[in-house]
Length: 271
Length: 210
Image (cartoon, rainbow over the protein chains, first blue to last red):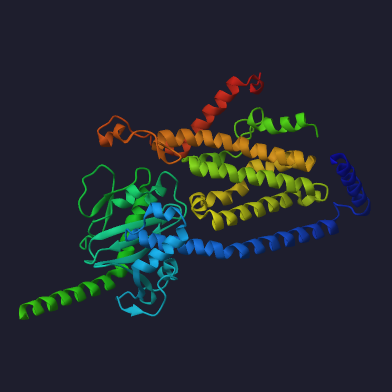
């Protein structure tokens, strides 16, 4: 079998060589055109065919991150049929999502499809900032989106606040190309867990300070990553920059909450 | 092709012509992806697939490729395969593809690929070329995994993400042990690789220059 095909091959090749000179310019040009067209078609087909699956993966990931920030992802359950589990949980707990501007006023737009990176490139007044509301019975959490720079590329994430908009309920960070084992450790649970129940310091330039591991911690500080100093600083800067943008919204909700609280107190007194 | 010959093609990259320790190709990625075992493992598989199939395709085309654009055609085949692998990983094993991030794309620049195409696939039939490609990918992968094993164990105290060094040993928990921070950094990978080459050469006398 094999020998036969070899002989055929050889005959084919010698036939080709007799007819055309494979090192001639015309052949070279034709060859490169054909091979490039074949490759282009192949890649286009593959890319188009795989796009829906890839997009779905990205959407699921985003939903998972939002839920994880609010502390509502059961790892064991997510293992089997993750897509279905995440979609259901998201529909159940994320009761509302909307877009706000720098002053905290609601704007037209779909919060889920916003790419924060693009928004940050716009002038401040035109930026659309996504807000997701997590509601589980009485529990209410505000989830904001973050985007910043690490050492090698972008870093991004979400931060969830308790109802008082001062206490962090949870964070999720992710990165494009930080060094595995060093900067990339910002995705580790042990790093992200530290942020829980920390309070944002309003006086300070940085709401949360990421310091050298080993120092004393207070309610505004967390340990950084050894060997990942620049990425850690990037996370600190990202929190500072993005929370500054949400300040308008935070203040608005805080004053609304205060009014409600006073109203309730008034009512209580009246009663 | 005799089976003996095929076997020789298959085993050579594991010993006398290992792409990393003997030919010293693909060092850059061996330093970059070996901090943890899992990315190293997926990288090894991806490179094996790409070397195997690029060797196969180039070997099929070998009598039709004009000499003047030989390198470009090889590059085109490699790049196409790598992009396909990347797209498929993104669509079906999204988590793994995220972990590897840029490294999948960097397979294109891996010197082993071009080296094998030039040295083997252009002058041999498709089946031996395919075996040669797979074997070289695996020869590369095995070094990657050895380096990653050492680095993950001593650098992070885990193997494949599973904790090996007991938590209670750590200084933070009142023990005596600290992970070696240096081993996570790329220079240490180079030193480990150097030690592997040293060991390999001292065991295999054929590799020693007189």
